[in-house]
Amino acid sequence: MITVLCVLSFLVGFDLIVTVPMLPAISESLNINMEISGVLFISYALAYALFGLITGSISDRVGKKKILLVGITIFSIATFVTGLSNSLVVLIGFRVLAGLGAALIQPTVYSIVGEVVTYEQRGKVMGSVTAALILPTVIGIPIAGFITDMFNWRVPFFTIGIVGVVMLIVTRTFIPRFKSTTSSSVVKMIKNALSNRIVTRTLLISFMYYGGLEAIFSIIGIYYNQYYNLSASFIGGILLFAGIASVLGSIISGKVMGRPHNKKRLLLAVSIVSLFSILFLTINDKLLYVSILLNIIWSFSYAFGQNIINTYMSNQDDQIRTTVMSLNSSAMYFGATILSMISITLLNIYSFIAVGILCAVIYLLSALLTFKLQTR
Image 1 (cartoon, rainbow, N blue to C red):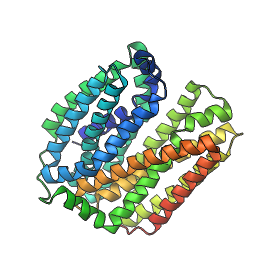
Image 2: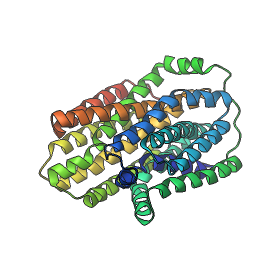
Image 3: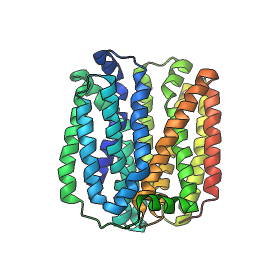
């Protein structure tokens, strides 16, 4: 069952970043501007964030397996048909539908882990699922790029769609049926979740924690190119090692989380590490290997902390667990979208140092909220 959930997480993560290496080919094929890149990512991320506000509550009310199967169906069809798109409008439309499918899948995956895994083992398993979500940043981008070079940009979408259909059959077979955990309305479940001060505080932490990551990640290629004049392949190699560090951070955090108080202390520690590593990274423009080291440290600490947040949220309310996990995912993607746009604006007006200061302030606020967080 856990293997199935990890594969589903991998597909969601793969679909999110699959357009990154294919943008030149898509632009040339459809005769559209390269600036489409931001539109494609934002359309997927915003769809995930917006639909995620309600999909978790629907899952708690209807049943996790039903929603998971519906999500996989929408995700697979939308991603496959994306490969048939012949215009920007159609392309964006199906990316939005794929984002909807992902918003149904990923929070439900996290919720099922919270449902079937014991408290003592939950952090470890959540670490594996989160690592599967991050893994596409390590191997997904080169795989998508290779397939695009060998065939064309449509084939990766077809591949994900077909694998999604296979996983639909596998999920029906290996994931058990879960009873509805509540009969409350969607609005009431969301209201109940947001009335919990611990949940709302953790949602703010997720917003800032993931947003701080994307604020620097969205411009990291520009940073290496402008400061060190590196080629795209060299930058890709750096991001490969950073991605490996993220996967390791997620796995290791799952193994070291034990007592409730450890979660708070560890999250506080990695927030501080992220703060200083990003700040010093953007200030440094002379020592390339120092920048690479700081990038790897930041990537490791981010993934380490994100798994703590996911595990922490899954421990809150058993009756509306999927609602809480879905709101958490929405907070992450809203943070990614909003803070990425702010960072790009700051870069255009000022410099990378301004982005570093923004991220430092964001992680400082995240650390302060974490310090006041009650442990569970």
